[in-house]
Image (cartoon, rainbow, N blue to C red; front, side):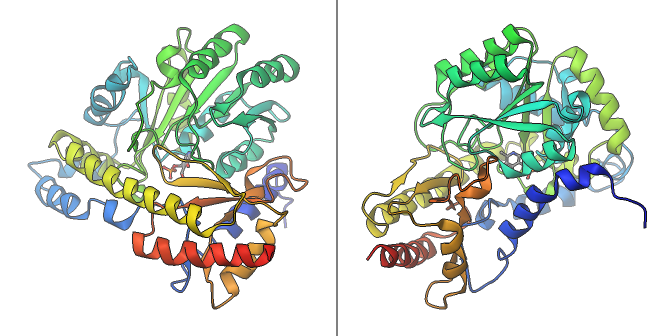
Length: 402
Ligand SMILES: Cc1ncc(COP(=O)(O)O)c(C=O)c1O
């Protein structure tokens, strides 16, 4: 057999973490607070059927949907992004600067293609999104973590590490972060855009949860403060429309867009035109505002139930975040409980059968960082099951402290 490329070794650890994370997601007996998939009630199935019925005709958009398409993506979907999704958030841009991608992971991959040589440094939040780390490791980058607090990444630590490590990229999820649900404050957003310009570093702003805000006040993306083109905004339609349609996008300046165009061409030519047509029509026919309200109401209720249950059933001394949007909360347990070990019991004990994601998977340092933490996803579980699952999990945790 030929020797595998070195990149397969560097990504081995994070790839294994991801395989383990989602291993038990489909066990019907388990109440899963593990995955990050949208609620099934949040998938616009009937609307998509209606749109597809109408547009899949030869005299409508049938040919466009099934034929090869342009590298950048369909112009009307890019217009939707500029006018409906970015302009209201204070981000200016032209459709010429929007590239449609295969979901929200492809932007990360394409940006790495542009910049990353083996051993280049990428700064990431601590904790961070594991899947992004897997991509960074595939490019043989060296990830270094930056401290966070309740207001997101700490900009003093970030600046110090930019000076020390001279990274190519700073990667962050500023809004309702995966895994913690935390949101970066306004002043830090402004500061991070400035740091990108000052030190000539790419700020990769990955913001797929931003549009699912159900409490608190909206904040502009970091990109809204970018005056030099150092910030690249990546987003996904997975949480607001459908993950199965595999749609996402990147907004970048002219120079970077030209390079991204070349990387996208070499990677897969373009994103599914079928998905793009359906998604563009979903927005253009005016379905989004009501759908958006529906999913925000649904997730708000689930967040409220989950937070109430954690406060009620988890032991005293538990710390948890209160997300104003998105799908996750993050809990830090008292008393030295190891959440990786606890997960084995919580998923196999027939009296419990509840899963979550153990905190240490999200820390690149290893060495037990985050081993008393858990990511709890409430988005995909209905309120009745949240109550049952959180009570069982809480009781199990309490039993360890007794
Ligand atoms: C922070 C973050 N970025 C990117 C993605 C990937 O999005 P997609 O599922 O559209 O590829 C996710 C998905 O969960 C995510 O949490």
